[in-house]
Image (cartoon, rainbow, N blue to C red; front, side, top):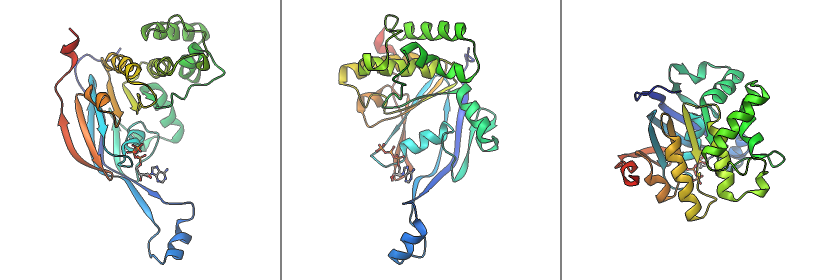
Amino acid sequence: MKTSSPSTIVTANDVTKVYQRGSEPGRLARVLGRSEPPTVSAVDSASLDISNEEIVGLAGPSGSGKSTLLHILAGLERPTEGSVLFQETDLATLSKRNRTRHRLKHIGIIFQQFHLLDSLSARANVALPLVELGIGKQQRRRQATELLERVGLGDRITHRPGELSGGEQQRVAIARALITDPDLVVADEPTGELDTDTGRTILQAFKEVAENRAVVLASHDHETLEICDRLIQLRDGTVTNRLKQESSSDEDS
Ligand SMILES: Nc1ncnc2c1ncn2[C@@H]1O[C@H](COP(=O)(O)OP(=O)(O)OP(=O)(O)O)[C@@H](O)[C@H]1O
């Protein structure tokens, strides 16, 4: 169980991510007669912090750096400059192996295209992070079953992803992201593959996910961004605006 009072889960300090364009940038630069290899600043000196019990949205046009920033916050990518503090831990101080383990224990990740394994049942997909953490089979099954019931898929436990609708697959992915009871959940275009009504069901599931943990999601979609408590607007890798939104949680009562 997470702590009940709001506290900062993750902080990005002046984070920059520079990619080389193309596989042979030096050669390409020579061919083009430039002195510098061509690079792209996907994220440029971005700073933000995210607390538990809040949903933060990353908004911005295609190519503005939303996915890159999400990946940096999740420890999937290392920044070229700047630092990411996860609670007390500076992610840069962790070895690759320890970063992976840290991510497994503390961070749940949800992708637009679900990223489920086709050969496994819904329950086995949800339980997968627990396999990697060395949790025994009985406990894995019990926890995965409980979570699938929580996201309304109690009657789909043994179905494989190919036998589920897009919305059901995304709910399996949400359950998988929650199986380790993570402090932070990151989601990249979580409703991008879904029709409007299914997307709304998923957004409702997201509000429940946010209880007692930090959630950061990247999206182009207006309705998806509406569930966020705060919005961070990106353009060309730079934070251009920060916006606090009215809480929508009272609407349901
Ligand atoms: N691995 C990579 N190598 C080189 N350039 C990259 C790489 N990943 C992203 N980029 C570039 O970095 C910039 C930001 O990309 P990013 O995917 O973070 O944007 P985004 O806002 O998530 O876009 P979208 O909304 O289209 O998913 C883009 O110019 C992109 O081409």
